[in-house]
Length: 423
Image 1 (cartoon, rainbow, N blue to C red):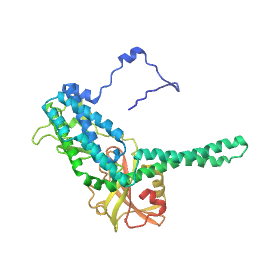
Image 2: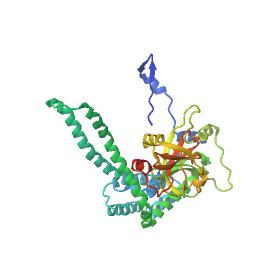
Image 3: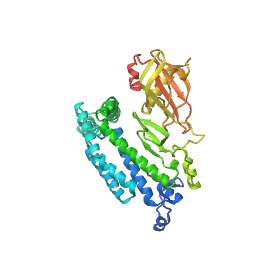
């Protein structure tokens, strides 16, 4: 992260040039690892060893959950493989448990499994007519769309040099189109790609189940090794927080979760063995540990409003049985206009009656990963053409507030003007 410092004196901006002496005497900012190491009197090598193992499982976990994100990116995958292989090689210098991890890596043929899985998934994607990675397709489309628009803009700029009058009022909409079209094309491609991933996720897993299980099994071994190391070093397990995209591993405690583009990221820590008392947290670390993962806003700050739309939903007679929450902050202006054009009435049904199975497995989440508690349910009537729900969430402990929109019946036709919002 970048930190910019500036100082304003008498209305003008002055950037202070630090002297050589001030550079030398400036306090060094410590990493979380260094703070942990000093507070718990840990061997630096022990902490580096744990960090290396966490980086290995982060890649393997993400690769096994979102293999489609790596198709046609062999060079990137090879770089990841080289990095984790280098880390695994160093396990030979550790204790017996680390040597067993290296042996497991070799016996389970993790590198070969990754390569085999990637080849199979790429073959599957090719059979569906996709021949390039989504990043490459976005770059190519951006060039294809931008080139003609740029050419038109250049023509408008050079016409006056040939004494050909140009209506200046045409320039503004042209520039707007020039800016918006590439973004709209990009949004459409990304949306289509995420739909493709969701539609084919189950089939890919079924066809490659054995490979996925090999990776999951090894991730479980590494997690068990890390937990064992931490317990041996008497490190309070609550202090070691990390994220995974699968929560079905043993001995993990869920802290929070965040859903983004159809993917759920789980923030977790390790659980203590049953019946074991937690290790005391040193006072120097307690304040940092007790801070929320996402800082709370100041009381005098207005809550940030975020719009979520319930998509891919199933509902009948006003009762919703399933849905997928989609963040629509990019359409905030259009949603605000939709609400301004609608009449509100309070729903006769309670939220628990409308979505009776609202739970962690099917919930509307805040940006921070907390489940949104709905306080008000409105029925909105847009121009007497379309009715929809507006669920108002209570202000979250992180300070934000969620507003969720949903059609009342999944079989009802959505007006063309509103399809961008509700699709």
